[in-house]
Structure formats: C-alpha cells, structure tokens
Amino acid sequence: VADIDQLPMTAWDMLPPSRYRAHHWHCFDRLHARSPYAAIFTNMGCPYSCTFCSVNVLAGKPNIRFHSIQHIMDELSFLIENHKVRNIRILDNVFTINPDRLEEICGNIGRRWGDLNMWAYARVESIKSSDMLKVMKRAGVNWLAYGFEAAHERVQGAINKATPHEHTEKVIEWTKEAGINIVGNFIFGLPEDDLDSMNMTLSMAKSHNFEWVNFYCAMAYPGTALYNKAVGDGTPLPSAWAGYSQYSSESMPLPTKHLTSKEVLNFRDHAFQEYYRDRNYLNMIEKKYGPQASDFVRKILTIEIKRK
Image (cartoon, rainbow, N blue to C red; front, side, top):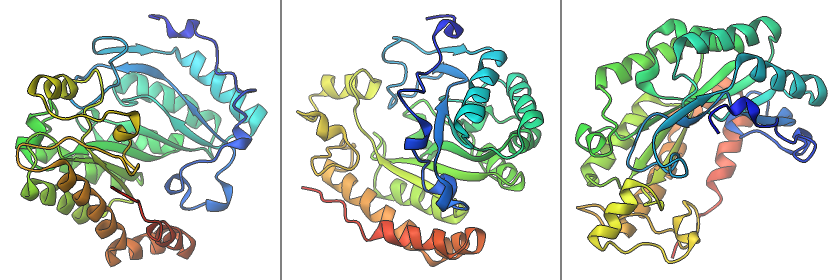
C-alpha cells in the first residue's frame, strides 16, 4: 500500500490500551503508571538493507512510506482523549529518517500535549544535529533506541551498517545532553564476530552505561541476507520457530566464522548478567529513578533463562 493513510486506524476497541502496559524501562520513573499504553506508526518500512534484518522481507526491497501529519495527530488525539494514553511507543523502524518532517511532527505534539512519555527507534547516522534531539525531547520523546549492533568496524561492515565511530560517540553525547535516555541494541554472533569483538561490544555498552540495553544473538531470520547465505553455505538452521526465539530453551543463533552457536548464546547470557549486575549501572538507575527502579532490575536478574 503506497498511500498508508488509506489504511484504517488501528481497531483500538479490540486492543484497549487500558489492558496493555509499557516496557518497565520506558516507565522507570513511573512504574506504578505503565498503563494505559499504545503504539503508533508515523512511517512504515525501512530504506536500509542490513543483512540481519527481516523488516523488508514482505516488501521484497527497502522502502519507506509516510503517514500524513494530520493522520498522526488524529490517531494521537483519539488515544489521548478517549483512552487517556500517556505512554506511547512509536513503531517506525527509523522515526528520525527525515529531519524536517520530524521537526513538524514533534512541534505539533509539543504544542498540543506537554506530558507524554514516548520512545522511538533512531538510526545513528540519521541524527544530523543536537537540535533534532532537543525537538524530540520537548515533544515528550524520553527514550531513543539506537541499533549500535557491534563496536568493531569489521563486524559492522559485514552487515551493511558501518557507522563512523566519531559520529556514534557524538550522537550519544548529544542524546544525553538533550535529556533523552538511551536503549542500546546490540547483536552478538554476527558473521565476523569472535570473542574479542564481542567483548569489545560489551565494553562499549558498559562504558556508556546506557539506561537500558538489549543484547541479542544473531539469527538467520527467513528472507534475510543472513538466511540466504546460511542456506547456501549449508549452515544448520532451526527446524522449528522456537529456535529463532531469543529467549527459548531451543534458541539456536548462527555460528560465526570463529564461534559455535552455543558459544554465542552463552556469551549473550553472560553479558546480560554482567551488564545489569554492574554496580555503576545499578547506582546510576537508583540515583536517576529511585530504588524502585533498581529493585525491579534486580528482580529481573533472579529469573533464569533455561537453555538446552
């Protein structure tokens, strides 16, 4: 569908926001008020072609389609006025893809509502200035999720996502200065990964002490370039969908040129524990959000992921 404004609004009567709650980190400062919660699109698709990503599989190629500003404002108005929603996820794969459009959207939201708590995905190279981040913050974008993926340039280059280190560091600094919290997304077990490069990625995350991180294993999701290469190379792949789950006991990430699937999975689970048990991280969370937030993290750490 080229003109996505032709699509009907989400059937919110079938997805009542009062029955849903935001991610815990999205509400670290309001854990008692995670509901109601809703998610919207301002654009669909993605213009990039990262080898690990399945976003464009259905479309068959990179693409990007935009909702009109009026459509976005109408849906937000409906959610806020009829369902009292304040916690909102912007589902766009890259909310920050068009700076001028971003400024118009955020300007409209900021002028109309002053107490929203939103988060969105951003791509580092799409952040052109610190002003972009200040505009988002004024609109209520309190969290941005960046796909850093890996710290080593060799690993980044092999997945079509080589971002200059200097720009990455600058964007992280701008984001923090704007008062926006960062969710760092990282992937262990990409094709060029070895133990040294994965430790380099973990060290990067720890050195920046992001408010939240997601550590994933590289999966050869069907339709992606990683999948096609794995099939061509005869690499063993999951025989059931549970094998593609990040957290199932059957989880079966890709091996790399240097590591087995099991080694990648073990490293990921170790990295999660190391990051969230770190005293610097827990102290930062408690100082920023209070003891209820750090206690929530500690509670998460008591839940063991069972692996075969």
